[in-house]
Length: 513
Image (tube, rainbow, N blue to C red; front, side, top):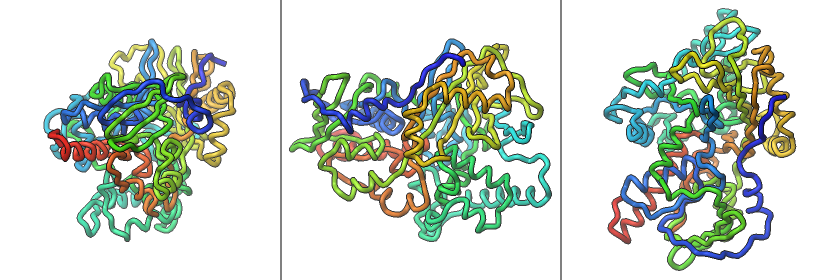
């Protein structure tokens, strides 16, 4: 058994908010806007405020590092991801993503160009994907070896249907499936898809091919942390039909990535926030005052009271009722209505490249067809020095085969050695010498990784109640407001909240909006 650590979101701090008797404040600090949460939505809110000339804000993050689901790690050999590891080419609706990429120098030229040019260092090097099935690696994500004519025809028809849905617009002129999802068509006809599962939609539309059902299930496990039979059909179709970005120097299905996954995006946003970011700070109580909002913040064993004119809650929605005793009842119910997927990631540090099976050559994303895990990404795939001896494999697994509550119990109680043994046994089927080559294996637990878009969760009113909440001093910003966790959704919700802060400031002080 290789050495390693059992890591994860700081559960102890989070559980103190729920369970512990907390000390009284011993100091008071002033800030204009207090942003609670240093994930993508909180950092994006700070980024937007800073780029519009407003720097009187503070971002508080409960963990020791920012980034949430997009954080990365670093070894002497290479950086590697702990969560989200790619960004699709942003389409025309993803204006905010394009503006950020242009600011970071990754999108080159006009951000509004139909087919922008991107820095080739961030375009995923080929081969991008392969799938392991029946003892062989196959190029791409959708299996194609040994299929009969009927299954190949269904694959073709499914792709044609998704291409049609990418172009389809509702009666309001909006695309039916847009990214961010708030820009999608509001047609009731299409929103009815939220009432059935993605699996049922496939069956209702004559798609019975096993490889298509596997692909649909893989997509839902990968992006939403749940089985396709437990995923809203609207969300399942959104996965395939929302991504319509193009590039002048890459194929449309190319993704943007780096050695540490989306860690480079976290660093870009955090740089804009600068010293206004404070980590290791748990907001335990929020109260409205006559002139603003008070927030009691636990920093180590010391309680600090922040006085702010406005507060942006950019942490998961289910935590807010614990911190805000006077939270309106309907909003409290909406925040608690969502369910969250438990998630497991592991990084295997390898002294050299493992033995390969037959078929397609090593790729960036290496997917398993019939396995509890999703597969692994190779951290060094983007590196130019191809002679590097070793590498890091980042393994992903959604605990969708048990209830979310059971998954959280397993994450809390299962020792690292048990997880590591299961992961090595799984990878041995593909790389027989993986145990001998693994010098370190760290496991990362995320008990509430993402809000699950189960049937009925997107358009039953509860999620929309969160997204449409209006308050004179407290604003909500998190991917939970979209109903599922994607970088584009988190960034959009953070910027929307920042715009609300700036609009309010514009009415009381001459600040840019």
